[in-house]
Length: 109
Image 1 (cartoon, rainbow, N blue to C red):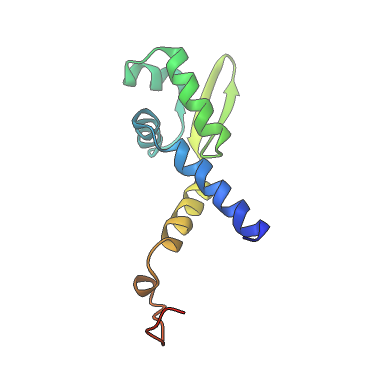
Image 2: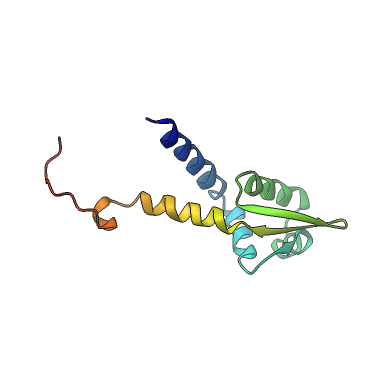
């Protein structure tokens, strides 16, 4: 495998692993409407701040969310480019026939 392919696969693994948790998917769902304060997320999810911080850190390290500080509060938002990257990776996993790249030769080898 080429280094470029290996790099793409490693990136895909990071992104999909970050989204492989129900709590993190719930956070992403809450952020769909735009930037949210961590205090809002904590209250709405009825979760301990430490538990939420762990999941937010995983999403941030994967590049799926970004944060900004305002005073003592942290605000989180989805990184649209990361979602576009996930989309492209998912499309690339579809069978060739579904991508309209039909083989002309119906043989294997």
